[in-house]
Image (cartoon, rainbow, N blue to C red; front, side, top):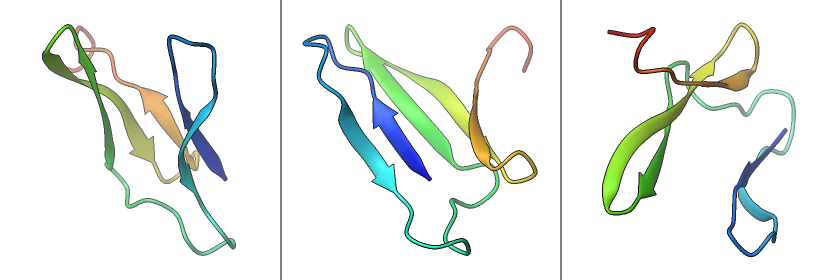
Length: 61
């Protein structure tokens, strides 16, 4: 499993790398984004789907 950060220079920056099947983020783990000095929740880990899901503030109020 790999995770990557978007980069303005089109480089791929690894955010995390999991070695093995039993090493995954905890359910509900959060990836935060900081844009123009504003911190926002960007994605939340779903352990059933075994992936980070895009966080939508409008759906999660």
